[in-house]
Image 1 (cartoon, protein in one colour):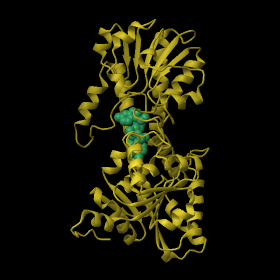
Image 2 (cartoon, rainbow, N blue to C red):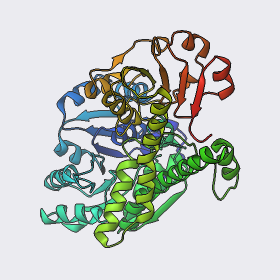
Image 3 (cartoon, rainbow, N blue to C red):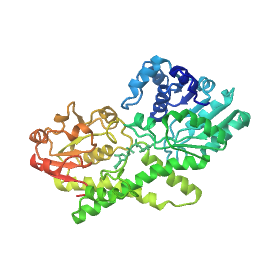
Image 4 (cartoon, rainbow, N blue to C red):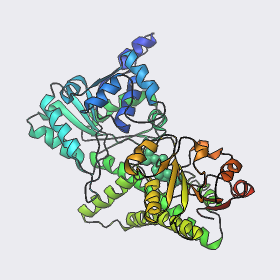
Length: 446
Ligand code: UDX
């Protein structure tokens, strides 16, 4: 649909408006939905969980993500965003139907496509006009074909739909910004016209686009996330060499990153990568490659470095404390990274497990993720205020680099502690400031 100048902003917006359905209200589905609605599209969001649907209708997002609640409330009251629990209704509504359901790792690490398949079946049963079915979930190569076959097997004529892959690259914590300011829009399709039609939905974002085949688009997502994870594992491996030779990994990363071919981003050494994407997608690509007959050793090495990073860090803590038995250790930050309450594959979980097994008492604070960790580890002392975290502790560990921790008065923190030992897992504090406050300061990569 061309964007024409008809003299009225509202009319232009109406002309641009597309009917969009989004199945799945996780990070990808919900954020994509509210951003597209905020751009003036007629969005129907769908989730089979009746509780989530009821909350969304009241403007309560089922996930913690800065900015989502405000846009959700605005687009609900504008009428651009609606919610249903019926895939049938969603299929009938959308000219474009996004599949954005979870693809969690199965027992052997291969992504579990049960939810994608179920949605494809439901879409097939309810298609009654030409529809572009868009796979936004991260799926192994070949899944676009799989979705197409499921729909064809239900007797839907080929002319009534196209399957398109449109992977999402948003990061938790900055998901709204990332969705509005993508580095690129990737669209994979057999039918180029369908790809171009979907591109019109994103036209207002003015982002570079890559139109390719289905398999390549699916692989772009896995390869991008795996490469970023590889980059972090690389700098973490360099951090180990730095510790052994007395170099400083921050300076090394700065020196490397200034070479534009390498780039500055994702060279922050720390406890390793976690979250819902990198661990799953790296393992997913290893498995995809394995199933195709290729042993992706480079990625397996990145995984091994990542596993070892937190073990090595905790060995250092244990050695410094002379064992964990009877010690009190305080943790600052529990989420897998700042600005999210997501604790999937968070390093805090490994650290708490190591400490509890070793006989330590654990105190912890996180601005938003404590309730989630409480469900996994009920026997940790969770505190309400950041300055209570280290009270009476032998050692303080910075696990997640929330901004509010960077401003902490370390004098005040130190005075509340039994021992003044600070292990900084994210290079969040300055060594000089920590030492001035009387801490024995240890970090990663120097
Ligand atoms: C990632 C991708 O960035 C995003 O494009 C994709 O769509 C989903 O997966 P996300 O998992 O939300 O996003 O977080 P991200 O900011 O990429 O961080 C991932 C992990 O890497 C975190 O555990 C973070 O602490 C770690 N990290 C990141 C580092 O250790 N060092 C860095 O320099 C950057």
